[in-house]
Length: 308
Image 1 (cartoon, rainbow, N blue to C red):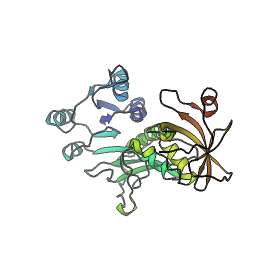
Image 2 (cartoon, rainbow, N blue to C red):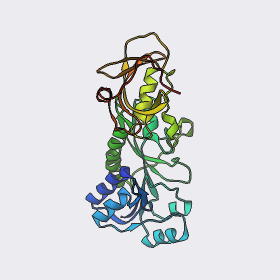
Image 3 (spheres, one colour):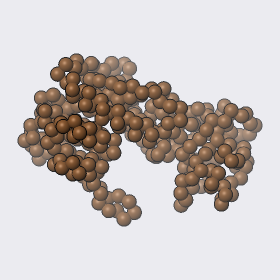
């Protein structure tokens, strides 16, 4: 079986490595064009490109996967299968219809729930107790194709989006191999649209903490936006990021968002149904650090109300 692999970020790399290690024939890797990053705006390859070149696999980086040149290149390879893992562009039907086995996608949720760009973040923000990986046949809709295999995992109460991302990318790599091993015997299962939900792309404003919310919801928001775009609030007009909080069982008087105490545990803040402890922060121009370390050289005051 000859395969075209499409992927771009770190999440895609374990699947590419796993297929290579299992001796699948990967004739071509398609990834997004190199981009300028960092302070020096140096042109950098995508993680998938770097790994493909390391493995000695040909790489193709079209600006638009759906233009004539790209489609002709895919047709020339004549793949049995196109595997798509977080590639970053929508494929038109002409491409989806090229391979004998179609195009298979690794999606980081238990479809039909959390279709869309950011399922890993939203399952945490919404307080879900389980998630997983689904392999699916691609069609012209957004993550609406027939499902092939699923792998479920429980969501730990303290896991961040970054940590869950790293777990799921390896589960996805294993599941795609299981899918390919059974490809001739699998019976695709149609998704029930009535059970579907949507996980939109993350927006930087999403992390703005509403201190009138419940402590559980605030903790989920902080975890679900860590490391990006990061939860945040304002201290005397200065916006600062919040990367870690704990739920505090104590009950305090005061206004929601008010700093009740600052101690070795962190910054205790009053919220609608109790309080939380902010444990890790980053102020502008400073490194991310534990609150206990930050307060050694910086002044934070009790009684200040966080937020704009």
